Image 1: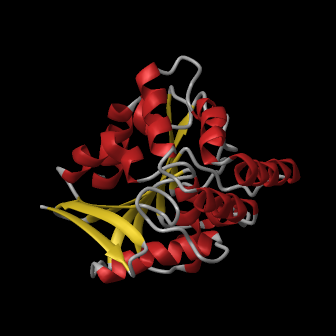
Image 2: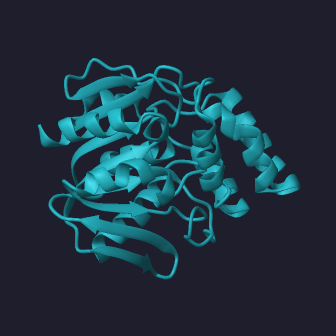
Length: 253
């Protein structure tokens, strides 16, 4: 059975499958759809909840400024509504920042976490300046032109044309205010490198060998496992089979 739900008429989410709960949290320019190729395979083993973050997909636009902690609280709100007390969290890119925020604050019982093409480092001064310009660009010219100009940076240079088109389609569902809010939250996100170095929760990091969008996670923490895909920033589209295999192996171990 597939459940489509909304919390406080703002957050849209999809729930399907049975067993232990897996939460899918997308990144900037994403949405539930970005997980399309890994969602169904995961539902064969788990009870999967995928959430459209505010201003993305079918979720309403946020009415205030956001931080990674505020996004994490939104995810927790969905889990509370669905009576989920413990879960595995899988966060892509910004969704990984949100997952780390939840782990830091111990908002809920996260049994294991997967960081897909994400980072534990904060924005550099250069990155903050770039995001500010992107916010201004979206305000001046709209989200459509912004998406067309940036989405190719998220995939490997040799990515399939259909993968690029799919990523664009998902990104175009985001609202201008949602993107501007997300850019602001990413600019202010905390440095989580110390957390990753010391955390006792098991974490799987999946990184793309051709991913230029994020700073790689570097840690000697034995609780953190790192694997690579020969992809850009959207490996769950570019090489979904490898991503699913690594996730299942990690969560079932």
